[in-house]
Length: 485
Image (cartoon, rainbow, N blue to C red; front, top):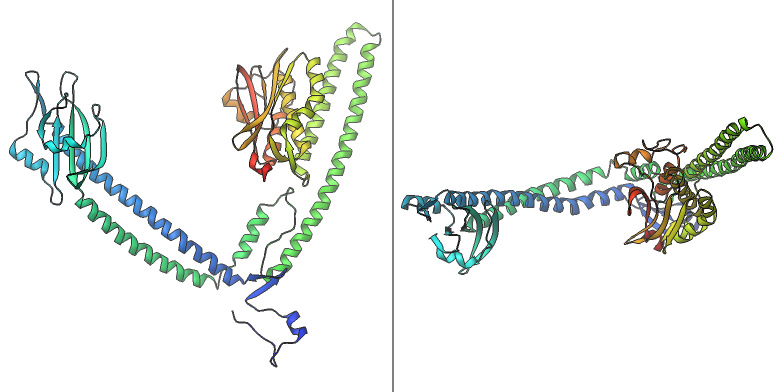
């Protein structure tokens, strides 16, 4: 595009502040290319990079296929020699007549050599000089192909182990010169070069034409918006032509409204959590008091069942709120953390619960840096611990570990309970799903919440076998380099 200038020679101050070259626009003092320029650059990039790469791949595929066919033909010669092996009076012989020898060596382009060695490595028939190649001995029907040099001549050699009676193995060596292969390589280079050159010219012309019709920045903006969710509401910062700046500004205003709405939702969740937990806590207190007061013994089972139902309801409410918060919270700012510290914080709440439940809770903690949200990571560990206490059976042994494996930081919870069969582990990570052998009273949400939180941190949650045999090991892993970065 051409650059326009004001009439009358030198531009005035007002004209320079309100006009810009039509081929470019400025944002923050930096130059941005026009849509046509951007399209031309991005369309030429595949022509200059992808086309040569495709040409190289095409050449390799065609070359390797042709060499494979030639090796197969060389192997057929070895098989033909193997078919002539005989055992007479306890001796291995090769029935090769003059016409057969000429047939084995016939090739219009290359010279063909062959050699047959008995089980002791002695020459039975053929070109003795091939023995100097010292090819490795092969087992019966085992092949070996290689490039070799003999007396200054480059060869393609093949070795085959062949049965020659009484469990003995004879070695058959076949070799040929490389004339066919060199000629084939040159032909492939010419053909592929012409093909890729023509394609590059065609694509370059098509790219030049596409610069007048394409709108690449709109596609990029569409892709960016497609990836946005409530966890990514920061303003769009793309360098775009002037025509798209009003659209970018409109989207940024929309993101700001979504941030305010999400904040209001978080306030609602906090209030809902308080309103749900308070009556359940009061009901649990009343039941505990009723159990302490003198009462009809027949009411004891009823009160116990009510107590268990209230506990499950409180836990379910907490889990449902955790799911909503994990899905809807856009902004808890991620910060550098250590999974060792997360486990230590959770231990303060769960060690007394484990002792009350008769569980042996152990900690093996090493530094494991991550980048994440402390609340959600504590919730992840709490749900996994609750899952182990609930399903591991009476007097379980539970171990919490943190540490690093290469580029990954990990946190594990291992128990010695019945575990989950491998074929059911994927299903156990879905909401309201429980293993077929589960005997606890859970709702099937604990591992699902942990999976959601793991995905939110760009990590993974794995259900593995326990290291000590029976049991389940739940591992949360997150890339360590994210925290280091």
